[in-house]
Image 1: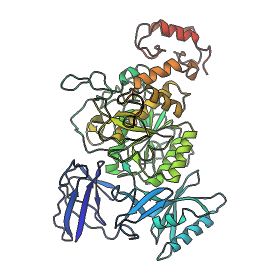
Image 2 (image 1 turned 90 degrees about the horizontal axis):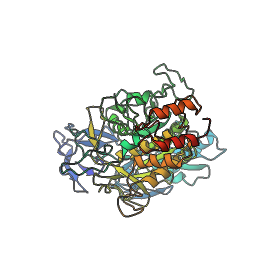
Image 3 (image 1 turned 180 degrees about the horizontal axis):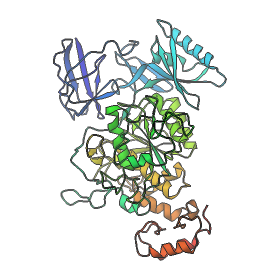
Amino acid sequence: MLNIRVLSDGVDSRVGIYGVSAVQSNGRCTGCPMVDAVNVGTPHGRWSDGAMSMRRLHGLFFPVMCTTVTLASGPLEPTVGRAGEVKMIHGCRFEFDGTRWAFGGAEAEWFVSHDRMTVRPRDGITDASWREIIEQLAVSAGASEDVQIRELRRNRLGFIDLEISGVNAIEVAFMGQDHPGLRSIFPAVTGRYFDSPEGDPLFLEQWNFAETISNGDGMAFNDIDAESGWRIESGDPSICIAILDSGFMEQHPDLEDAFASGIVEIADNGIDDDGNGFIDDVFGWNFITGDGEIDGGPLGLIHGTRIAGLAVASRGNGVGIAGLAGGSSDQPGCALLGLVIGEGGPDASVVDDAILYAVDRGARVISMSFGIPPSPSAIAAIEAARSAGVFMAAAVGNYMAEVIFPANHPDVMAVGGSDQADQSWWATTVGPEVEIVAPSVVLQTIDPHQEGWVATGTSYAVPQVAAAAALLMAWGDCLSGEDAREILRESATDIMTPGWDPESGWGRLDVGDALRQLVQSTPLACRCRTDLNGDGIRDGADLGVLLSLWGSPDPLGDLDGSGLVDGADIGRFFLADQTCD
């Protein structure tokens, strides 16, 4: 008999069972003579009897309509280890739960692949030499058959993803972490997206953006002041936001214009038109399947599409919602680059490749609503993106004991969650890394299968912060990622303990104040704001445009971000340089 343990970890429900491929929605089995019982555990006391909207299994989500429990044809991985055994690899803790290895301990259930790893040979080590090193390590780790090594991919920083047979990958990584011929070796791990099962698909108002939405008692919700920010900047297709996630619906009416912005590659012609080494990567790239199909499968569509909607859903198009950097009815918003890193959970071994791809494609902002182990390859990629001036934001996590990677990396802005009462969301992870919070509760966004969806989780705070950084860069295109990060910190609305605190960081995101600070403090040379007719020169024609906007809130002429075109804007106009570069 087999005992199935369904764990509710506050992000999704996962089945910790060796060889199970589906589970009945109510937690009981029918027609499964090999299964003895189902033990449903709820460490957070929020659900009982397995009542959840989704199930996660083998890296996939299964909807509640699954009705049976079946057994896989064979073991998921070679059984190597003793229950409770711990291995430390490059400072990361892995624990064996009796059936498989997991990063951070068995309760975390960030499962380790038994046959994949990432290595980085030292300079001067040839391909033949590092292969020989891996083979020797495999033999030392107890390989029971001829070791087969297959290279999956490599990036420009020298990291190589491998598939290995005949031995458990974690044993090879453990034995090889101090090998003189290797700079690093790390097992592949499936991480976690920070979604929450809470939500109501009938709630169709965006309290986090709108200034006028209130609850039933007339109390105004505490939004991020998007509407006043839009009077200054609503987005620019020259600013690209790369979202690393589960999958994206390219044809969604609220996203299709964002994906279409700045296309160089020609779709479906089998040619690498832009010469970047990726064929038909029109909308982005799928690092799991190795092609330009970024839907991520029927389940992968969900999380990534919802995240993208909050960032860049077209504004003013009469459809769905408004993304924070979604432009306006007469101006396109920021561009979206969709990068698939795993359907049911992020594959940690491809995150470095996705980050480097985003940098090489010219993305100015990277949004990461997930957690993975701090592998050497991912750390190196983040540092490369920071050196390129890219802004990066990541979720601190839901219900976690501590802020996890990549949010805990010093080059990444750690984003927590707030609620309608302008308090830190009760389930957001707290800690010394938290820099800023953004709304994370009952947020209206788009959905690939229905008109809209209300989502909850720190996953959904991140695209708002990422989009806010994109708006700053759209107004002042000379800004670096660190510049944008500093402005977001300084402009945040303090909501908890005065000053910084581990629950809310420096405060709740305030887009309007961030843009106003930028307008008032950044030299106009950062962006030729006074070339109002776009001919490259500030002259009398531009003054005529400015005067024609007198008394209006038009952001084109509102040079100081006050919300009104007036004498102060005339003063800024004459203080500007004569030419625009």
